[in-house]
Length: 250
Length: 250
DNA sequence: TTTGCCTCAATGGTCCTACCAAACTAAACA
DNA sequence: TGTTTAGTTTGGTAGGACCATTGAGGCAAA
Image 1 (cartoon, each protein chain N blue to C red):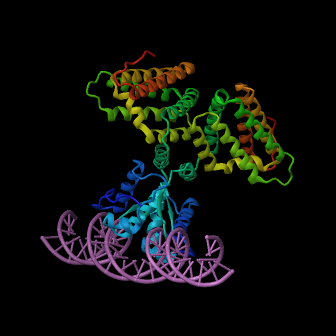
Image 2 (image 1 turned 30 degrees about the vertical axis):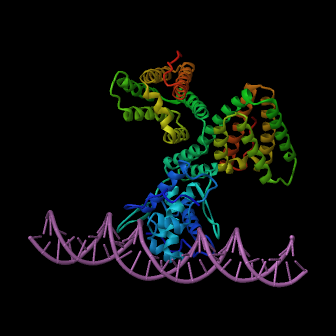
Image 3 (image 1 turned 45 degrees about the horizontal axis):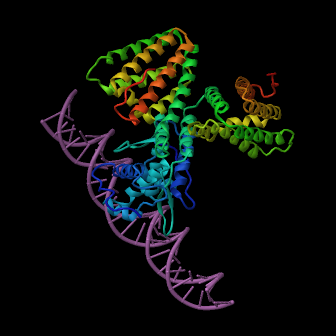
């Protein structure tokens, strides 16, 4: 599976950490490439001159970090893989959840990211991408009058739209941040689509935004983004306040 | 340490995952609060009706996630703690590193964040905070003509400045993102301070930016932020290109 | 009483051995 | 030739044993 002289026996204390660090270093320095497999637990046990439990804990750590995946059976073992955005978002979500993030602060952050993304998308995306975005928003309209709404599908579409927009910046970092944010707390966005009236407005707002972007109307697109977050804030307020309160005009 | 009926025995397959999930759920639902301790490994082993190895692997997973810390000896065990930003940044750094992020794309993202932060800081921070920022930048000047530069100290100052600015937005999300970004790849920024000429310009740029912010000169502050990234790009180009190439005028 | 030392028990860290379950391989067989 | 079956590899689990660390409580000396 892999070279034998890559690792050295463990010295003192926290052997598990040591093993994990050595293997992680081997992966990060690309001495072991994604797709390749580590030696079996029993082989590693021999190479590191340690107990199998130590190896298993190290493997566990690396798996948690997203650096490897584990397969059972013959030809099984730990296989190096590329770290996925999902790992970052899980970590982020955990942090946000345990630290009781104010949704208003989160919304403000997302709004700022959205505005930046919109600016970059308008100035960099080609006409094909912009048309594709408009097309995608048109699909949303199918959910306008659908009484028995498939929320799953709707949320999925919304997510794809956000990511499509992020991709149009030509900068993958924005796409990743967007994916992390989405995975982290899509729950908040759900609220927007739960209520019929908010759903209608949100969908129409998406269509409007896409059209402005396609027409290179930056300022109007930004304005439309702003309207989206006005909707979001109203929705959050409404869910928190007296639930029978009516929707105020935008 | 903790209630006895919190957990239930494990059923099938991946017992370790199951245990980890149950404990994680108990932590996230705040049935166990930060500072409190989990039962000892041997107690958990009894409660979950499983082997000690399984418990240890679960504990390892939670430790990696940053949900608990582990102490040895009497009164030792797993203690619940708040997830720290460092966990998010480590995860982020791992992702960025293994996916070979283009520094130009990263810089663009950081620049956009910096601009947003600056806008919010100018409009929300009180005069005290703004003065404090100016004061802090003045400290940088001590490093202007210092021949034997303490890079550690300088980098630390730079980091604190960025975080101070992020705090001035009044939105903790920006502070956390900034911390994550800093921890993730401060290495790139180091380059700016390595070269004497770049260091001089960067320090003066910081002072300028702080003054503009203190004077509520938003546009000029943003312009100054832009200049910072022009410097950064030049520096990166220079390091990548022929190393003897001179610094072009800004 | 106070201080310093010592012992002891609790607990995580490591090692080992055994067995089970899954999954791929190859031989045996129809 | 195609299918079934037995074997082998490998991770998953169980349980026991011992070590190192650490905190607490007791004991003795000042």
